[in-house]
Length: 474
Ligand code: DMJ
Image 1: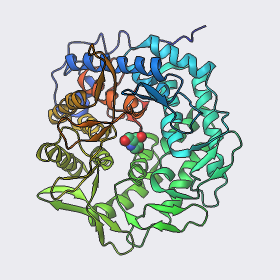
Image 2 (image 1 turned 45 degrees about the horizontal axis):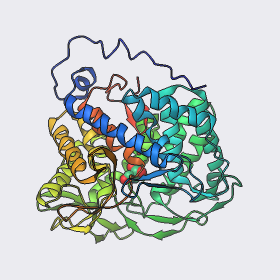
Image 3 (image 1 turned 180 degrees about the horizontal axis):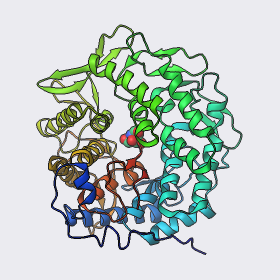
Image 4 (image 1 turned 60 degrees about the vertical axis):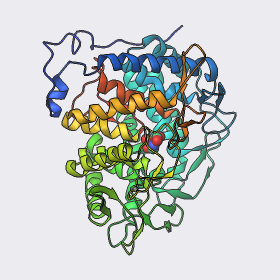
Protein backbone atom coordinates (compact mmCIF):
# COMPACT_ATOMS: atom_id res chain seq x y z
CA UNK A 1 0.00 0.00 0.00
CA UNK A 2 1.55 3.32 -0.95
CA UNK A 3 1.91 5.73 1.92
CA UNK A 4 -0.57 8.58 1.81
CA UNK A 5 0.82 12.08 1.81
CA UNK A 6 -1.52 14.42 3.57
CA UNK A 7 -1.96 17.44 1.32
CA UNK A 8 -2.17 20.27 3.74
CA UNK A 9 -3.78 23.64 3.96
CA UNK A 10 -1.68 25.21 1.23
CA UNK A 11 -4.51 24.87 -1.22
CA UNK A 12 -6.64 27.93 -0.85
CA UNK A 13 -4.10 29.90 1.20
CA UNK A 14 -1.12 31.47 -0.54
CA UNK A 15 -2.08 30.15 -3.95
CA UNK A 16 -5.52 31.65 -3.81
CA UNK A 17 -4.36 34.77 -2.02
CA UNK A 18 -5.45 38.26 -2.82
CA UNK A 19 -4.02 40.22 -5.71
CA UNK A 20 -0.29 39.69 -6.16
CA UNK A 21 1.67 42.45 -4.51
CA UNK A 22 4.35 44.30 -6.36
CA UNK A 23 7.80 42.93 -5.52
CA UNK A 24 9.46 45.24 -3.06
CA UNK A 25 12.54 45.07 -0.83
CA UNK A 26 12.18 43.75 2.70
CA UNK A 27 11.34 40.41 4.24
CA UNK A 28 7.79 41.40 5.10
CA UNK A 29 7.01 42.18 1.47
CA UNK A 30 8.73 38.99 0.41
CA UNK A 31 6.54 36.96 2.73
CA UNK A 32 3.30 38.40 1.43
CA UNK A 33 3.85 38.66 -2.30
CA UNK A 34 2.48 35.81 -4.37
CA UNK A 35 4.03 36.88 -7.62
CA UNK A 36 6.58 34.48 -9.10
CA UNK A 37 9.69 36.32 -10.23
CA UNK A 38 10.75 33.97 -13.02
CA UNK A 39 7.97 31.45 -13.63
CA UNK A 40 9.70 30.30 -16.82
CA UNK A 41 12.84 29.37 -14.93
CA UNK A 42 10.90 27.89 -12.02
CA UNK A 43 9.21 25.54 -14.44
CA UNK A 44 12.50 24.73 -16.15
CA UNK A 45 14.14 24.11 -12.79
CA UNK A 46 11.33 21.77 -11.74
CA UNK A 47 11.55 19.88 -15.04
CA UNK A 48 15.32 19.53 -14.75
CA UNK A 49 15.05 18.43 -11.13
CA UNK A 50 12.44 15.79 -11.87
CA UNK A 51 14.34 14.51 -14.92
CA UNK A 52 17.47 14.07 -12.83
CA UNK A 53 15.52 12.54 -9.97
CA UNK A 54 13.98 9.99 -12.31
CA UNK A 55 17.44 9.26 -13.75
CA UNK A 56 18.73 8.65 -10.27
CA UNK A 57 15.87 6.25 -9.54
CA UNK A 58 16.24 4.45 -12.87
CA UNK A 59 20.03 4.20 -12.95
CA UNK A 60 21.19 4.30 -9.35
CA UNK A 61 18.06 4.18 -7.24
CA UNK A 62 19.34 1.42 -4.96
CA UNK A 63 22.55 3.30 -4.33
CA UNK A 64 23.28 6.67 -2.76
CA UNK A 65 24.44 8.80 -5.68
CA UNK A 66 24.18 8.93 -9.44
CA UNK A 67 27.14 9.13 -11.82
CA UNK A 68 25.36 10.62 -14.83
CA UNK A 69 28.17 10.26 -17.36
CA UNK A 70 29.01 6.61 -16.75
CA UNK A 71 25.39 5.96 -15.80
CA UNK A 72 26.27 4.10 -12.65
CA UNK A 73 25.66 4.54 -8.94
CA UNK A 74 27.81 4.56 -5.83
CA UNK A 75 27.48 4.63 -2.07
CA UNK A 76 28.31 7.66 -0.01
CA UNK A 77 28.88 6.41 3.53
CA UNK A 78 30.13 2.87 3.13
CA UNK A 79 30.54 0.88 -0.05
CA UNK A 80 27.94 -1.86 -0.27
CA UNK A 81 25.75 -0.16 2.36
CA UNK A 82 23.51 2.35 0.59
CA UNK A 83 20.67 4.23 2.28
CA UNK A 84 19.36 5.80 -0.95
CA UNK A 85 20.84 9.10 0.11
CA UNK A 86 19.73 11.06 -2.96
CA UNK A 87 16.12 10.02 -2.38
CA UNK A 88 16.31 11.13 1.25
CA UNK A 89 17.93 14.44 0.32
CA UNK A 90 15.18 15.05 -2.26
CA UNK A 91 12.10 14.61 -0.08
CA UNK A 92 11.30 18.21 0.86
CA UNK A 93 12.36 19.50 -2.56
CA UNK A 94 9.81 17.13 -4.10
CA UNK A 95 7.22 18.49 -1.69
CA UNK A 96 7.98 22.11 -2.53
CA UNK A 97 7.80 21.30 -6.24
CA UNK A 98 4.45 19.55 -5.69
CA UNK A 99 5.78 16.28 -7.06
CA UNK A 100 3.50 14.26 -4.85
CA UNK A 101 3.75 10.94 -6.61
CA UNK A 102 7.52 10.92 -6.23
CA UNK A 103 7.27 12.13 -2.64
CA UNK A 104 4.69 9.46 -1.90
CA UNK A 105 6.98 6.75 -3.25
CA UNK A 106 9.95 8.18 -1.38
CA UNK A 107 8.09 8.19 1.92
CA UNK A 108 6.93 4.67 1.21
CA UNK A 109 10.54 3.55 0.83
CA UNK A 110 11.63 5.33 4.02
CA UNK A 111 8.81 3.94 6.12
CA UNK A 112 8.78 0.38 4.81
CA UNK A 113 12.24 -0.46 3.48
CA UNK A 114 14.90 1.79 4.95
CA UNK A 115 16.99 0.20 7.67
CA UNK A 116 19.89 1.71 9.56
CA UNK A 117 20.92 -1.56 11.14
CA UNK A 118 24.12 -1.43 9.13
CA UNK A 119 27.38 -3.03 10.19
CA UNK A 120 29.61 -0.28 8.86
CA UNK A 121 31.16 2.99 10.01
CA UNK A 122 29.10 6.07 9.18
CA UNK A 123 30.49 9.59 9.32
CA UNK A 124 28.52 11.22 12.12
CA UNK A 125 28.39 14.76 10.72
CA UNK A 126 27.31 13.73 7.23
CA UNK A 127 24.76 11.29 8.61
CA UNK A 128 23.22 14.05 10.74
CA UNK A 129 23.08 16.89 8.23
CA UNK A 130 22.10 14.76 5.25
CA UNK A 131 20.10 11.82 6.57
CA UNK A 132 18.67 12.88 9.94
CA UNK A 133 18.08 16.36 8.47
CA UNK A 134 16.65 14.96 5.22
CA UNK A 135 14.27 12.74 7.14
CA UNK A 136 13.21 15.54 9.45
CA UNK A 137 12.37 17.83 6.56
CA UNK A 138 10.72 14.83 4.89
CA UNK A 139 8.65 14.46 8.03
CA UNK A 140 7.68 18.13 8.02
CA UNK A 141 6.65 17.68 4.38
CA UNK A 142 4.71 14.44 4.76
CA UNK A 143 3.71 14.45 8.43
CA UNK A 144 4.19 10.71 8.32
CA UNK A 145 5.20 9.50 11.80
CA UNK A 146 7.16 6.65 10.23
CA UNK A 147 9.57 9.16 8.71
CA UNK A 148 10.18 10.79 12.08
CA UNK A 149 10.69 7.35 13.61
CA UNK A 150 13.44 6.63 11.07
CA UNK A 151 15.15 9.95 11.84
CA UNK A 152 15.05 9.09 15.53
CA UNK A 153 16.34 5.56 14.94
CA UNK A 154 19.36 6.89 13.07
CA UNK A 155 20.01 9.59 15.67
CA UNK A 156 19.88 6.95 18.42
CA UNK A 157 22.44 4.88 16.54
CA UNK A 158 24.68 7.95 16.24
CA UNK A 159 24.39 8.91 19.91
CA UNK A 160 27.37 6.76 21.06
CA UNK A 161 29.59 9.28 19.25
CA UNK A 162 28.51 11.87 21.81
CA UNK A 163 27.83 9.72 24.87
CA UNK A 164 31.16 7.89 24.69
CA UNK A 165 33.21 11.05 24.33
CA UNK A 166 34.94 12.27 27.48
CA UNK A 167 34.76 15.87 26.27
CA UNK A 168 31.28 15.91 24.72
CA UNK A 169 32.75 16.51 21.28
CA UNK A 170 31.62 13.61 19.07
CA UNK A 171 33.74 10.85 17.64
CA UNK A 172 33.96 11.10 13.89
CA UNK A 173 32.52 7.67 13.03
CA UNK A 174 30.03 5.23 14.51
CA UNK A 175 29.25 1.68 13.44
CA UNK A 176 25.48 1.83 13.14
CA UNK A 177 25.02 -1.83 14.11
CA UNK A 178 27.51 -2.23 16.95
CA UNK A 179 27.72 1.35 18.19
CA UNK A 180 31.54 1.17 18.09
CA UNK A 181 33.08 4.62 17.80
CA UNK A 182 36.27 5.66 16.02
CA UNK A 183 38.11 8.73 14.80
CA UNK A 184 39.18 10.75 17.79
CA UNK A 185 40.71 13.46 15.61
CA UNK A 186 37.76 15.57 14.53
CA UNK A 187 37.20 18.96 12.91
CA UNK A 188 34.99 21.83 13.97
CA UNK A 189 32.33 21.56 11.27
CA UNK A 190 31.89 17.89 12.10
CA UNK A 191 31.77 18.53 15.83
CA UNK A 192 29.45 21.51 15.83
CA UNK A 193 26.93 21.03 13.03
CA UNK A 194 24.02 19.23 14.59
CA UNK A 195 22.21 21.57 16.96
CA UNK A 196 19.31 22.36 14.66
CA UNK A 197 18.66 18.78 13.52
CA UNK A 198 19.03 17.46 17.07
CA UNK A 199 17.09 20.40 18.49
CA UNK A 200 14.24 19.71 16.09
CA UNK A 201 14.34 16.04 16.97
CA UNK A 202 14.22 16.84 20.69
CA UNK A 203 11.22 19.08 20.15
CA UNK A 204 9.40 16.52 18.05
CA UNK A 205 10.10 13.55 20.32
CA UNK A 206 10.07 15.32 23.69
CA UNK A 207 13.46 13.78 24.50
CA UNK A 208 16.06 16.45 25.31
CA UNK A 209 19.07 14.16 24.93
CA UNK A 210 19.71 15.06 21.30
CA UNK A 211 19.73 18.82 21.86
CA UNK A 212 21.78 18.46 25.03
CA UNK A 213 24.43 16.43 23.20
CA UNK A 214 24.64 18.95 20.37
CA UNK A 215 24.95 21.89 22.75
CA UNK A 216 27.60 20.15 24.86
CA UNK A 217 29.68 19.63 21.73
CA UNK A 218 29.43 23.30 20.75
CA UNK A 219 30.29 24.44 24.27
CA UNK A 220 33.28 22.09 24.50
CA UNK A 221 34.78 23.84 21.47
CA UNK A 222 33.87 27.30 22.74
CA UNK A 223 35.49 26.59 26.11
CA UNK A 224 38.75 25.84 24.29
CA UNK A 225 38.86 29.14 22.39
CA UNK A 226 42.09 31.05 22.51
CA UNK A 227 42.76 34.20 24.51
CA UNK A 228 41.88 36.07 21.29
CA UNK A 229 38.46 34.36 21.15
CA UNK A 230 39.49 32.39 18.07
CA UNK A 231 39.14 28.65 17.49
CA UNK A 232 41.27 26.26 15.44
CA UNK A 233 40.20 23.66 12.90
CA UNK A 234 40.98 20.27 14.38
CA UNK A 235 40.93 18.80 17.86
CA UNK A 236 41.38 15.48 19.65
CA UNK A 237 37.95 14.77 21.09
CA UNK A 238 39.37 12.50 23.81
CA UNK A 239 41.98 14.87 25.22
CA UNK A 240 40.54 18.18 24.06
CA UNK A 241 43.94 19.18 22.69
CA UNK A 242 44.03 21.23 19.51
CA UNK A 243 45.64 19.44 16.56
CA UNK A 244 45.46 22.39 14.20
CA UNK A 245 45.46 26.03 15.25
CA UNK A 246 44.18 27.65 12.08
CA UNK A 247 41.27 30.02 12.60
CA UNK A 248 39.27 30.18 9.37
CA UNK A 249 35.84 30.46 7.74
CA UNK A 250 36.95 27.83 5.23
CA UNK A 251 36.27 24.14 5.76
CA UNK A 252 36.65 22.26 7.99
CA UNK A 253 35.20 25.00 10.20
CA UNK A 254 32.52 26.76 8.07
CA UNK A 255 29.23 25.38 9.41
CA UNK A 256 30.52 25.38 13.00
CA UNK A 257 29.94 29.15 12.96
CA UNK A 258 26.71 28.73 11.02
CA UNK A 259 25.18 26.47 13.67
CA UNK A 260 26.06 28.73 16.58
CA UNK A 261 24.00 31.39 14.84
CA UNK A 262 21.25 29.01 13.75
CA UNK A 263 20.94 27.48 17.22
CA UNK A 264 19.59 30.89 18.13
CA UNK A 265 17.78 31.63 14.88
CA UNK A 266 15.96 28.30 14.76
CA UNK A 267 15.73 27.30 18.42
CA UNK A 268 15.97 30.63 20.22
CA UNK A 269 18.98 29.34 22.15
CA UNK A 270 20.61 32.36 23.75
CA UNK A 271 23.74 30.43 24.78
CA UNK A 272 24.39 29.81 21.10
CA UNK A 273 23.82 33.48 20.31
CA UNK A 274 26.25 34.53 22.97
CA UNK A 275 28.92 32.06 21.79
CA UNK A 276 28.33 33.15 18.20
CA UNK A 277 28.69 36.83 19.05
CA UNK A 278 31.91 36.27 20.97
CA UNK A 279 33.54 34.21 18.25
CA UNK A 280 32.24 36.01 15.17
CA UNK A 281 33.14 39.48 16.39
CA UNK A 282 36.71 38.36 17.15
CA UNK A 283 36.85 36.66 13.77
CA UNK A 284 35.51 39.67 11.85
CA UNK A 285 37.80 42.07 13.73
CA UNK A 286 40.97 40.11 13.08
CA UNK A 287 40.34 38.26 9.86
CA UNK A 288 38.40 40.60 7.58
CA UNK A 289 40.73 41.72 4.83
CA UNK A 290 40.13 44.12 1.99
CA UNK A 291 41.89 43.10 -1.20
CA UNK A 292 41.33 45.21 -4.32
CA UNK A 293 38.40 46.83 -2.50
CA UNK A 294 36.76 43.46 -1.89
CA UNK A 295 35.97 41.87 1.46
CA UNK A 296 37.56 38.49 2.09
CA UNK A 297 38.50 36.52 5.20
CA UNK A 298 42.05 35.41 5.89
CA UNK A 299 43.08 32.31 7.80
CA UNK A 300 45.06 33.16 10.93
CA UNK A 301 46.73 31.45 13.86
CA UNK A 302 44.20 31.31 16.68
CA UNK A 303 46.79 32.05 19.38
CA UNK A 304 48.95 34.72 17.77
CA UNK A 305 46.30 36.19 15.49
CA UNK A 306 48.83 36.24 12.66
CA UNK A 307 47.62 35.54 9.10
CA UNK A 308 48.67 32.19 7.70
CA UNK A 309 46.87 32.13 4.34
CA UNK A 310 44.59 34.21 2.15
CA UNK A 311 43.23 31.26 0.19
CA UNK A 312 39.44 31.35 -0.17
CA UNK A 313 37.31 28.22 -0.30
CA UNK A 314 34.07 28.38 -2.26
CA UNK A 315 32.47 26.53 0.64
CA UNK A 316 32.94 29.65 2.77
CA UNK A 317 30.62 31.58 0.43
CA UNK A 318 27.74 30.41 2.64
CA UNK A 319 28.92 33.03 5.17
CA UNK A 320 27.42 35.89 3.16
CA UNK A 321 23.97 34.63 4.09
CA UNK A 322 24.89 33.83 7.67
CA UNK A 323 26.34 37.28 8.26
CA UNK A 324 23.38 38.95 6.58
CA UNK A 325 20.95 37.09 8.79
CA UNK A 326 22.84 37.56 12.04
CA UNK A 327 23.13 41.35 12.12
CA UNK A 328 26.14 41.96 9.87
CA UNK A 329 24.23 42.62 6.66
CA UNK A 330 26.80 45.05 5.33
CA UNK A 331 29.59 42.50 5.58
CA UNK A 332 27.39 39.66 4.32
CA UNK A 333 26.36 41.63 1.25
CA UNK A 334 29.93 42.81 0.61
CA UNK A 335 31.23 39.26 0.89
CA UNK A 336 28.67 38.01 -1.64
CA UNK A 337 29.67 40.89 -3.90
CA UNK A 338 33.27 39.65 -3.67
CA UNK A 339 32.26 36.19 -4.88
CA UNK A 340 30.16 37.72 -7.66
CA UNK A 341 33.20 39.77 -8.73
CA UNK A 342 35.36 36.65 -8.61
CA UNK A 343 32.90 34.94 -10.93
CA UNK A 344 32.74 37.79 -13.42
CA UNK A 345 36.24 39.23 -13.31
CA UNK A 346 37.91 35.85 -12.82
CA UNK A 347 36.38 34.77 -16.12
CA UNK A 348 34.46 31.82 -14.71
CA UNK A 349 30.99 30.56 -15.35
CA UNK A 350 31.17 28.41 -12.22
CA UNK A 351 33.28 29.30 -9.20
CA UNK A 352 36.39 27.22 -8.52
CA UNK A 353 36.70 25.31 -5.25
CA UNK A 354 39.71 27.42 -4.27
CA UNK A 355 40.42 31.05 -5.09
CA UNK A 356 43.33 33.47 -4.77
CA UNK A 357 41.60 36.69 -3.70
CA UNK A 358 44.40 38.83 -5.10
CA UNK A 359 44.47 37.53 -8.66
CA UNK A 360 41.04 35.82 -8.60
CA UNK A 361 42.86 32.82 -10.09
CA UNK A 362 41.82 29.30 -9.18
CA UNK A 363 43.86 27.56 -6.49
CA UNK A 364 41.70 24.48 -6.89
CA UNK A 365 40.13 24.16 -10.33
CA UNK A 366 37.16 21.87 -9.84
CA UNK A 367 33.67 22.49 -8.52
CA UNK A 368 31.79 19.74 -6.73
CA UNK A 369 28.37 21.02 -7.89
CA UNK A 370 28.51 23.40 -4.97
CA UNK A 371 25.47 25.27 -3.64
CA UNK A 372 27.10 27.89 -1.39
CA UNK A 373 27.00 30.87 -3.78
CA UNK A 374 23.28 30.47 -4.45
CA UNK A 375 22.62 29.46 -0.83
CA UNK A 376 23.85 32.90 0.25
CA UNK A 377 21.99 34.59 -2.59
CA UNK A 378 18.80 32.94 -1.36
CA UNK A 379 19.36 33.94 2.28
CA UNK A 380 20.30 37.52 1.40
CA UNK A 381 17.30 37.76 -0.91
CA UNK A 382 15.03 36.50 1.88
CA UNK A 383 16.57 39.17 4.11
CA UNK A 384 16.50 42.12 1.74
CA UNK A 385 14.32 41.30 -1.27
CA UNK A 386 16.98 42.90 -3.46
CA UNK A 387 16.80 41.91 -7.10
CA UNK A 388 20.58 41.64 -7.39
CA UNK A 389 20.38 38.27 -5.64
CA UNK A 390 17.69 37.09 -8.02
CA UNK A 391 19.88 38.15 -10.94
CA UNK A 392 22.84 36.26 -9.50
CA UNK A 393 20.74 33.15 -8.97
CA UNK A 394 19.43 33.35 -12.54
CA UNK A 395 22.93 33.71 -13.95
CA UNK A 396 24.34 30.84 -11.89
CA UNK A 397 21.41 28.57 -12.67
CA UNK A 398 21.84 29.13 -16.39
CA UNK A 399 25.60 28.66 -16.06
CA UNK A 400 25.16 25.40 -14.16
CA UNK A 401 22.66 24.31 -16.79
CA UNK A 402 25.20 24.92 -19.55
CA UNK A 403 28.25 23.50 -17.82
CA UNK A 404 27.07 20.73 -15.49
CA UNK A 405 24.16 19.22 -17.39
CA UNK A 406 24.63 15.75 -18.85
CA UNK A 407 22.21 14.77 -21.62
CA UNK A 408 21.64 11.80 -23.88
CA UNK A 409 21.92 11.93 -27.68
CA UNK A 410 18.34 13.24 -27.96
CA UNK A 411 19.19 16.02 -25.46
CA UNK A 412 17.13 14.53 -22.65
CA UNK A 413 18.57 15.42 -19.26
CA UNK A 414 20.28 12.56 -17.48
CA UNK A 415 21.76 14.51 -14.62
CA UNK A 416 24.05 17.25 -13.41
CA UNK A 417 27.65 16.59 -12.59
CA UNK A 418 30.60 18.00 -10.71
CA UNK A 419 33.20 19.82 -12.80
CA UNK A 420 36.87 18.82 -12.77
CA UNK A 421 38.05 22.12 -14.24
CA UNK A 422 36.14 25.40 -14.37
CA UNK A 423 38.99 27.30 -15.98
CA UNK A 424 38.66 25.71 -19.44
CA UNK A 425 36.06 26.31 -22.21
CA UNK A 426 34.14 24.18 -22.25
CA UNK A 427 34.59 23.31 -18.61
CA UNK A 428 35.72 19.74 -18.01
CA UNK A 429 32.99 17.62 -16.54
CA UNK A 430 33.50 14.97 -13.89
CA UNK A 431 31.00 12.24 -13.20
CA UNK A 432 29.05 12.68 -9.98
CA UNK A 433 25.68 14.18 -9.12
CA UNK A 434 26.37 15.07 -5.48
CA UNK A 435 23.30 14.26 -3.37
CA UNK A 436 23.27 17.72 -1.79
CA UNK A 437 22.47 19.20 -5.20
CA UNK A 438 19.00 17.64 -4.85
CA UNK A 439 18.53 19.17 -1.42
CA UNK A 440 20.23 22.50 -1.96
CA UNK A 441 20.91 24.05 -5.36
CA UNK A 442 17.62 23.25 -7.06
CA UNK A 443 15.57 24.14 -3.99
CA UNK A 444 17.14 27.58 -3.69
CA UNK A 445 16.65 28.27 -7.38
CA UNK A 446 13.07 27.05 -7.37
CA UNK A 447 12.11 29.08 -4.32
CA UNK A 448 13.65 32.24 -5.75
CA UNK A 449 12.28 31.88 -9.26
CA UNK A 450 8.78 30.68 -8.40
CA UNK A 451 6.35 31.13 -5.54
CA UNK A 452 5.87 27.72 -4.06
CA UNK A 453 2.52 27.69 -2.27
CA UNK A 454 4.11 25.23 0.13
CA UNK A 455 6.76 27.63 1.46
CA UNK A 456 6.07 30.51 3.84
CA UNK A 457 8.67 32.96 2.49
CA UNK A 458 8.54 34.35 6.03
CA UNK A 459 11.66 35.83 7.66
CA UNK A 460 11.79 33.00 10.19
CA UNK A 461 11.79 30.20 7.60
CA UNK A 462 14.72 27.96 8.38
CA UNK A 463 16.76 25.88 5.96
CA UNK A 464 19.57 23.84 7.50
CA UNK A 465 23.16 23.80 6.29
CA UNK A 466 22.09 21.03 3.92
CA UNK A 467 19.11 23.04 2.66
CA UNK A 468 16.60 20.95 4.59
CA UNK A 469 13.54 23.03 5.43
CA UNK A 470 12.95 22.55 9.15
CA UNK A 471 10.62 25.55 9.45
CA UNK A 472 8.62 27.27 6.74
CA UNK A 473 6.84 24.44 4.94
CA UNK A 474 3.12 25.11 4.53
C1 DMJ B 1 26.80 20.52 2.06
O1 DMJ B 1 26.82 19.18 2.38
C2 DMJ B 1 26.54 21.32 3.30
O2 DMJ B 1 26.18 22.61 2.91
C3 DMJ B 1 27.72 21.37 4.21
O3 DMJ B 1 27.54 22.19 5.33
C4 DMJ B 1 28.98 21.80 3.48
N1 DMJ B 1 28.77 21.92 2.09
C5 DMJ B 1 28.12 20.87 1.41
C6 DMJ B 1 27.92 21.19 -0.05
O4 DMJ B 1 28.97 21.86 -0.62
